[in-house]
Every structure is written in structure tokens, then in C-alpha cells.
Length: 375
Image (cartoon, rainbow, N blue to C red; front, side, top):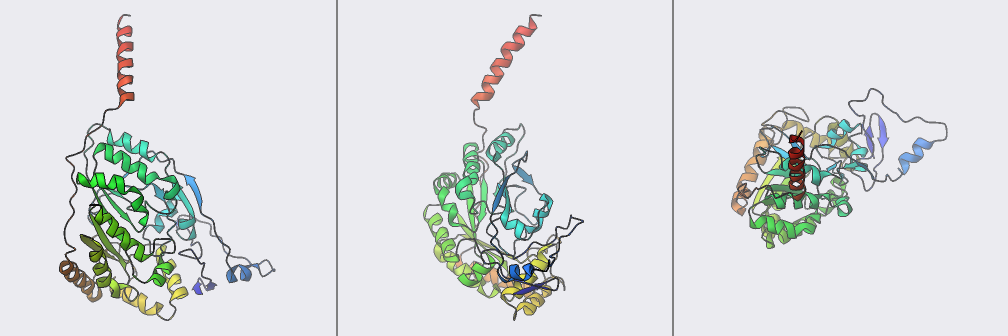
């Protein structure tokens, strides 16, 4: 059990968080109300299961742009909004508020998908003057989350990128990436892909609590090995590191990934923007009540007394003694293990493939133009 707004919050097994927090854009907030039948107590004792629902997202663009100096890319593709993995620490949770949903339980149960994403992407890559640069696949939510097993939108995106010879970087915590090893191998042969597996902990109990529907840690390490064996450049992200909870595992995560075949590594410090702060606090009190205050105190030591610091240059690494020590440990371990082999991506292979339908349209238009010229 944990506490939220003065009331007991039960653990909802199989989900990252137990309840919905208020959407910061909504003026009206729903609160539990006792109707005299003790229904609130009954639901708290055994919260009902919440099914995952899917809604088509009719976005008119496949590429999203960013100008953050903290990121190594300026464009990204996200086939899905929301993520069924349910990672309690996910920095993308607050983005669900833009859809009118809660960053809490809604984020992992009310998902949207972009059914036309492959066609949209092709249209954008064909635009005159398009300049290719590496695109991040899965910058906001995981492209290989469970619903992709049936929708397969990520594979459709990769097929377009392969035809155009466009470089792509993939981040996932799912072994589902192995479904596309055939495409990834062909992309790798031309220096067009690198894959990063996010490994937050090697402890299966902690992983199940933090990332209830993501692949088990051992399965992610196996995926690194299988990708590496296929000749696909693969790295590991020890992310996020949470002081007092999983940061002691940093070296073990890097060592396991290096033995599996990873070439490069990265890490980030826990970020708790907006609504995520209260959700993470509640989760800590639910699962680790004896350590919650200590963990929160350590986080504040890396954020100048706060739980979050959104400033560029600080938000991924933090500052202070704890943050500096983590950075030093990472640099020493990654160098010792050879996890500092950069995996550059090529842009020289990009070319716009021939489009028969466009050619037919041009020929038809030319004939019509000649007829109109007679008048």
C-alpha cells in the first residue's frame, strides 16, 4: 500500500502505477466518493483489472522535430503514444496530458497508434529539399511495446527507411526487436542502423515492479547478444539510474551487456517532470516504504534540493557529489569494458526511390496540358 493525497493507494498488479493523476490541463478533477455501500474500500482492497484500449491517431506527420542540445538527434518517429510497458519512471508520461488523458494509468492503458505512419513517412522523405540525418525510433515511447506484435507499425517504418537508405537509431527495452532482425541486418550492412537496449536493473523482482510489462532483464541481454551475432551494432543504456534503488548495479549492468556483445553504452539519471513526481513518490511508498524517504533525499541531492531539474545540460546527468560520482563510475567502467566504441550512422546512401504512381500522374498531366494548349 502507498499514500496519495491522504488516502491509501493499493498496488495494482501488472501495471506500473495504480491510479490516474490529475491532468494538468484539466480544470475539473474527479475524486472518489463513498456512496454508502463501502464501494471505495472494496475497490481499494482489490482494484479491478484495466484493459488496454487502442485509438487511431490521425496525425498528419510521421516525423517530430526537436532542438534540444541534450539529444543527439533532431528528428524522431513514434508510431505509438502511451506505452503498455508501464514503466513507473517514464519521462514521457506527462506528454499523455496533451491528448486529454492522465499521465497515470491512462498512459499505459489508453494508447493511440498511427495507422498511416508508413505512408506519412514516405511522403515526408520525398519532399524536395529533404536533408537526411539520423532519425530516432522510439524517443518517446517504445516502438516494440506489446501492441506492436499485432500492429507491426515499427516494421512498416523500417521498410520505408530501408527503401530510402535512411539512417535510424532504435531504443527499446523489448526483445521484440528481434522480429525485424532481417531488415536490421540489411540496414547494418550499409551503416544505417544502431540499436540500443535499455537495461534498468538485473534484479527481476525490481524490474517487474518498475517495468511490469517490459521484457525481463535476462531477455534484454539475450537480445543484445543475438543482435550483435547478426552483425547489428548494439549498445546498452543503463537508464534511468535511481539513487538508492538501482544505481549500485551500474557496473554489473555494463559488464553483462559487454559480455553479451554490446559495443557502446550510455546512462541517464532519473528525471521526474511534472505529474511524474507524485506518481513516483506514491510508487516508492507502495513498494519500498522503508527506503522511500532515503531514495527521495538522494534524488534531491542530485537536483539542488528538488526532485527534478529541467534545465538543458543538467536534466540527464544531474549535479552534486552523487551525480558526479555516478558519472565517474560510468566513464571508468565503460572505458574498462570497451563500451566506448561509437557507432556512427551513414547518410550517403539516402536516395528517393522511383515512384510509378507519381510518374503516371505526371504523364497524364502532360497530355492534359497539351490538349488545353489547343484552346
